[in-house]
Image 1 (tube, helix red, strand yellow):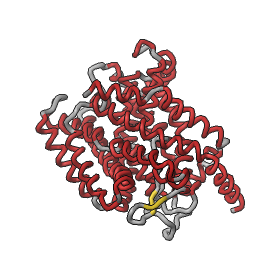
Image 2 (tube, rainbow, N blue to C red):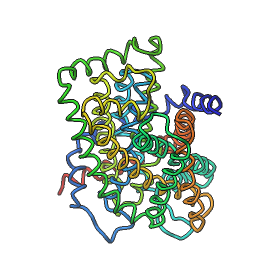
Image 3 (cartoon, rainbow, N blue to C red):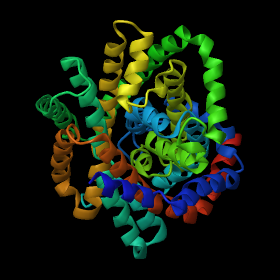
Length: 447
């Protein structure tokens, strides 16, 4: 199974997808003439609630929509995903994560603007957003197979198996004081986590939005403070660590025999898992925002890659690099990050990271079922979405027990498949966004 999933991921992330994601991001960057970047301050003002209107269509405020999207992205991809990137591609992979994130700013602007511009209705008649609705409402019913393709990949792509695996691993390591915890303990932890997740997800999107709005700021502050302490303790190594990221990005001396293409691909994969720009999950959250201004939501959405990858992922990467733990070839994922914390924060480092991991993983796991249920509802009808919730909760237990490599390859492959319809529809409908963008920014100048 490991070999099959590895091949699946390898083929899914081939050159065509690289051209679609990176080439599409570059196209959006120049096609928008950097207008979204130039209005970053306005995007921050929108988050304060100045433009919120409770009477608008949708279920979430601008802030709650961003929080829900960030809860799914500022998560295990930042703690464990960065460690996986460094273990697989060396420090240079982080540079390509940055490049991917910068392109992801305009990609998210376009995809999330479209999510509001072309909202549809589920079988209950409730307004919904996301790539599948963008495809149906923006491109027409003849494109429905592409919308279904996205939805099926999305159901699996947003399963909680990666978060459950890494959360169970660190909890079990702390309980049994071993890097190879027993299967029985992992299953027990998975069951406990699944019960908590069930309580939240069966409460619907509004409960998810309220919980994530409280969890996201807390988890970011807690983690940032801990990592800043690690960097302060190792401040002499920080300049050399930053230099190594740039050097290794083009030479790849440390790993992979200098295979630059492999390092670039590793960075792009992990950035996609981290900020999800172009994948299609964030548009499902932002498509639920209470607004009639698509560009306004697109501006809010583009903040995500900056917070997620440029800030939080960079901090994690530096913590792993400056402590030297990245050179430990026996460790990967959460275990690598845990060693960095343990070495720099004596006695309590492992506990501090465990608290961060619990909050990060749970916040992601309560956001993902919202996405998966939307995909399931689009294909099978909204009245059956509880079936997906049951599948999702069961996947928590499954993810706690299977190998990390299998999980990474499965999720990577599904993310690749999700990106295809998301990027194709966004590229085809980009002129509609540009027209709306010019109108919005022109009206903004008159205020």
